[in-house]
Length: 201
Image 1: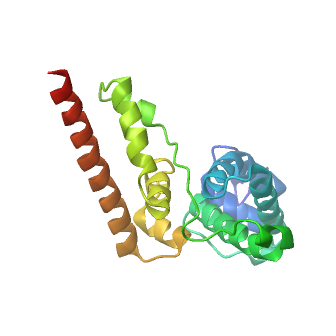
Image 2 (image 1 turned 90 degrees about the vertical axis):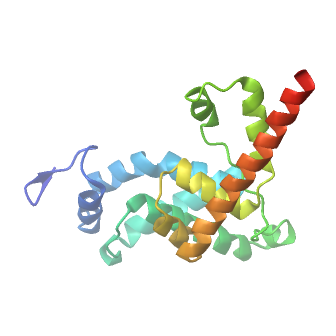
């Protein structure tokens, strides 16, 4: 499909796809859906672990985008926009459903499951499996917001500004969250490895 002399394909820049979507070009919407559905779902199930509930929220998000396509604003990053929108949808829908309000409500203390590709991270640094287990343990010790920020930064490769928008906090708070998380991991991980070294030798 051509639009403004541009051929819409899966390799088309996101900004052009977004503009084509706003002009009701279904091919652009389908490409964005295929490209980001799994990305958005993976983020959602880490924010809240009820996968079926999150799936519904993701589907509602894309339906809403298509239905409101003519009124969408321009975005700098489509991925950042989708993640931010899903986060808001999950929180909003959790307060609408009576059964969900009676169960565990989503709050700032809700657990956040971080499972980015630390195997690749460690393998690239020639670290052993024992070190991998220690790193997993340190990730579990981070706060929910630290884990979310780490996930968005290192798994989704988002900028600090994008993370701030998604998490609805200021830029400095994002920098501090990630800095403190990395510092805690490095400190505790080093202590753990050093203790193992002393025990062995």
